Image (tube, rainbow, N blue to C red):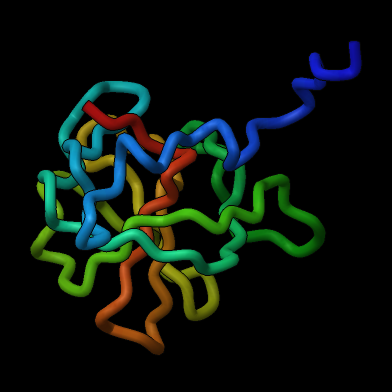
Length: 133
């Protein structure tokens, strides 16, 4: 019974058929996993596959920019938003190189997403880091 491996969450655990509409947008509201705050309304994000590294979700005080390895995940399934004002409730970390990480504006858990300062019209929210309802 090797089917019981649970080392880390996989992207296969996200059922895209119930989340992505025919036109490629989110069918459901995107919510913070911790506090349930609405991050994105239905139809406002476009499903995108892009390989991005996000540090592990931790308390705000433990996220630091440091030399060496950082625990995290490489995720490929995201909601792509082209305007930061589309979000209902999202905050941004200080710059980490040319990257700003997206966090819940209410409880400050994150990172739930990724934004490169070189591309002002691309904000990615990882499907694995949020809930949908």
